[in-house]
Length: 160
Image (tube, rainbow, N blue to C red):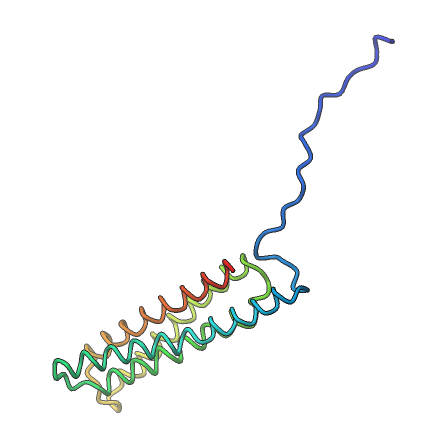
């Protein structure tokens, strides 16, 4: 043995690459079926969430004899339109994986807020003859119900 031969220190151990959960290839039939179900669930979360909020609001208004059905209907329509517009990019780009789904959810929140605020500004116009305070409360009720429904659908879509 020669004294000039040096031993190299061992490097870090080889770790096999781990594929993130959301980046499974869409070639298997199970993944394709799951993607279709997730898209449908996220797309339907807006109308279902707003429908539930409108139904509960109608029940409360009629139980307490509050005559503000026009404001409740306007808030439900506004929230439904905002929810559908917000989830369109999410449904279209859902196959890109879990990280993209998180980014799309944040974008959907921003779009939903902007559409809701712009719609409220339009509904505050004198031509609609709506009570502004009741309209804001009804819109908040529909908005938060819609947020819960869409968040639950998105969480389900990202985990399964």
